[in-house]
Length: 313
Image (tube, rainbow, N blue to C red; front, side, top):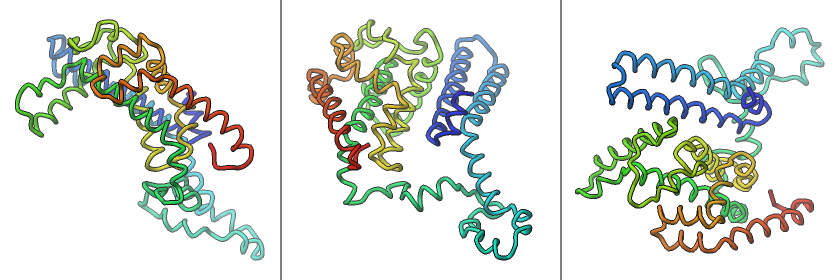
């Protein structure tokens, strides 16, 4: 209910529907895995999975419903309420012309009033913001987008290593084998995210047991990092890129957990063990002053520039 109300106030609240869909998929994967262990028949697993997907799909639809209601209500109000218009005088009717975009939402067509307004008046759309004059805004958003993508990549690398999904590297690698390992990893990661125990995840020799028990960067946080990935991709390719900082830091707790992992020595060491094979990661975990400097500089410059109507958000 809270997420549904949030979607009524801001459209990005609809991304919370991803949470419910992932929970439904993860519980379905757990049912399938229990069946593989001989704890249920195919029919019972099919019924359980169908009911779980239906239930969580309904919850996801309720969270996303306000955006659909906004589109439908706006179209009906401006384009289809002819009875009210016919009661107006001719002089008054001339000032209430039917908008041209009403033709875009005819019978059988899917029209989004919100997307239309965003595209026409705000130039929001896939790659529509990729212009030379927007380079300063991309530079402004580069730190938070980079941190978000590295956070998601680190969680995926930890999860991949936990489930030993890279076992195919011991043999000749092929596209089909890699795709099979990716699907296997996705199934095990979803399964682990719904279990208290790390189901299906053989503890790798590359990861200490202490890192496996860290809740904030553990397998049960899959939904948080998936939503972080969604917001980062939306900020990078669809929305005004300069809003990425407030968009991500106001909606994604996973970015704070990841930064804490870089700043707290014990957590940083654990993360470095898992994906610390690259020099960039080693420099990042050994230089927390860069992160502190980024936050300090962003706040100081933001206070100065934003109140003076300079491009800062």
